[in-house]
Length: 89
Image (cartoon, rainbow, N blue to C red; front, top):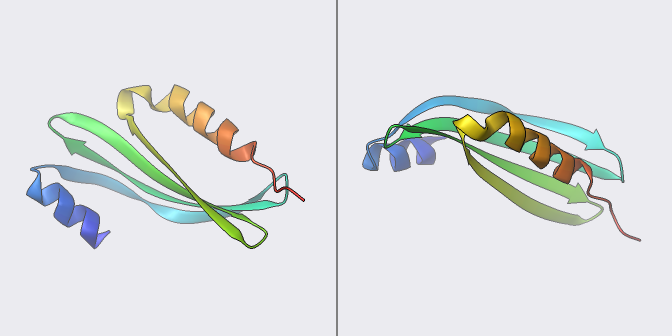
């Protein structure tokens, strides 16, 4: 959080909200941890999220960055993608 605030300050932006980390089990034998935040930069609101997907002994990092105006449609696509992941043999 501190690093993000500093990054925004240097660019003249401001944070709106930080999302508490969430952990959930999903189908396919995976566990998903997600964190993120919303901010304004150059008068445009953005939302950035990181998904850490744990599949057996592997960790995958997926990241999304979207404009707030596209949030509802983008969230549906992102969630479907993350939930669709499966652990292999």
